[in-house]
Length: 417
Ligand SMILES: [Zn+2]
Image 1 (cartoon, rainbow, N blue to C red):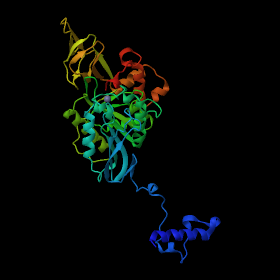
Image 2 (cartoon, rainbow, N blue to C red; image 1 turned 180 degrees about the horizontal axis):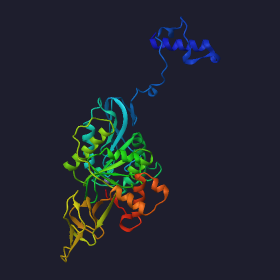
Image 3 (tube, rainbow, N blue to C red; image 1 turned 30 degrees about the vertical axis):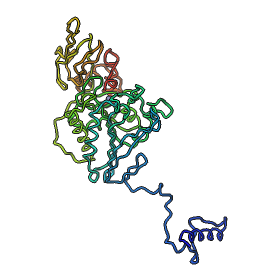
Image 4 (cartoon, protein in one colour; image 1 turned 135 degrees about the vertical axis):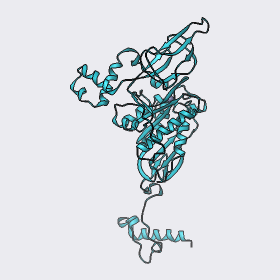
């Protein structure tokens, strides 16, 4: 008789002997005559899938990443456009010590390539045995767009307008919902990587909604990068995460459709600074000069169509009336000059191309000091609540006011990055 048969026979005997009323199931103590007694006593731990996790184990996408280990996982939205499972790599590095869970997302817009390389470099340079906390890197969120070299999903929807998503909504809303709930909800902080769009380029910069103190703390981690205050548009990953209590910023670097070594390097340096500031990894670089925070910015648009040629460089500081670029009508040969309406710094600009009237050509960061912001407020005798508000609240009040006058109200930021 095989061992299994002996065991089964023993169990059956024990059950019959005890009867329904007194059967104590797994607590049943076998007697000396019971064949079950011959097996070594084992503690009941339940089915294997509810086995207790080791402390510090990262559970993600149905997998468990133990402390001090790295895994390549995959995420797939259950309902894809083609109706075919389409999985995206998710790189999880779980540090030996517990701490923050930093998520890095690239190519939410499928044609924005610099972020893919930034995520790859950061994640593959981490040492899980010395890392505190975990890093979850998703190099290509919008795999559909990436494969077609497109910003959008196959239905021309912008994925970055559908977070946190809806499981019963459009294809984009379902993809957003799946990603947000399967990956983003595991983060304690998020950096979403972008570039300029539609043949525009951005100085490497952090976009942060400084009304949220936790977001300010996160932005401070990028000590050598320009920070631009901006309220995220509805449906963006940055906004949905922040609303859930996960502080989030976007890191803008360069232009779409290209891999730019300098911009990638700047992005990597910024995130390495952040890892150090969060106490997750040791700083690998020397301290660099801090960049200013811009609390406001404005777009300068083309008033005529034609061939646009830029006359300034990204990051350049300009004075009022400085020549930013020209637009020349190729038929009439008439040239329109675009001049700076105010002093500022070029944070984003169009690449040389043919443009239509109204095209957003330059984004200037405006030199508004925190002191000036507060002075203006005091002059306007705002309510006691606003006077007592912290700096973040003050900045928000200023921004709300500027939103009532013209160009700045129609901030096209998120649609252009
Ligand atoms: Zn983008």
